[in-house]
Image 1: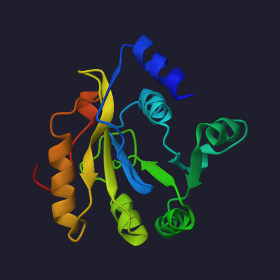
Image 2 (image 1 turned 45 degrees about the vertical axis):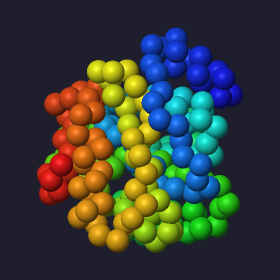
Image 3 (image 1 turned 45 degrees about the horizontal axis):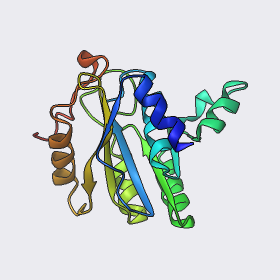
Image 4 (image 1 turned 180 degrees about the horizontal axis):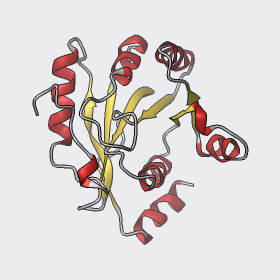
Length: 183
């Protein structure tokens, strides 16, 4: 399956940058997320990397028949309540090898305040945050780095902002770094 994903990315004119780190578990943030196309390139990247992953998707999208496709895609439903952070942390703790993929913006539309749930999932499950990206200008999908030290939320978000500083979204006008933290 990973060879097919590599071929698909090549056919689509995309290249991968940075290999997925050798980690058994992580929270993977993938940004920018301004288009549904982001999911395709992200999925192909994870397939070619042969990483056991699950995408977090809003539960309202899990209606028949779309739920069948989302389950096949590797999505897991989450609700808007705060319980999902603890549920995802528990899921990670219960697995030997799993990487949970989430959009830090929390939606496709422009937002100046990213969701903090991924940070709390990672700290609760005691796993690193892998910073994945999709750059439409360079036609690249890959990994920017790994955040291991998450003792301070502000410094973690500042570090993440720096990693995404020059990344170009499909719809650049819809992508803004979290304005609460300097880049």
